[in-house]
Length: 249
Image (cartoon, rainbow, N blue to C red; front, side, top):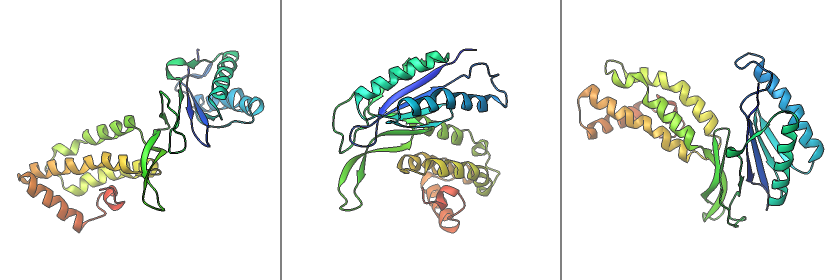
């Protein structure tokens, strides 16, 4: 069975640091879908990539989660050198990088102001890119290279919210909708809420919009009265929905 590895080189950390991300999509000689397959893939990458990087490039830092890997370098020249070395190493063990997913990106912030074609990357559901932030010391705005939930995962969450079947059922009570969504909300907030919550908050506000539509159909009322009804429910039961409880809406 063949092996497909996807990767990115991205800049981050220190004054001139870069990162490399590699993602494997298939594990050679492991049955896909089998219980043992992820374990074998993890062990295979540990010995063929992790140990090799530690031995031959001890000056670079890297992190790997399953088949996603980020390697930190100190210059573009070093990033290109490490990338080529990884290509050759993977070829030796019958793996290869998926070139369309491989690029060098500059992690631009208030310290790193050079121009680069690519200034963002995604890793484990987060998008790392330049973002406007306010200083905790003086309140002034500055550019930080920070993580938030990626656009692709925002779309995925909106799709899950949109496909909730209870939106079309006006016979149920709002508590049943909350019970259905709260388990998902806890998971989304626990994971994606670890960094900046602005994008996640905007995504979860879709729930309140759907609740207003549901209230309009349930009580055959206009938009304004439905908004007032939802606000009154929030005041009476502020912890009914988990994102209400956590201050997301």
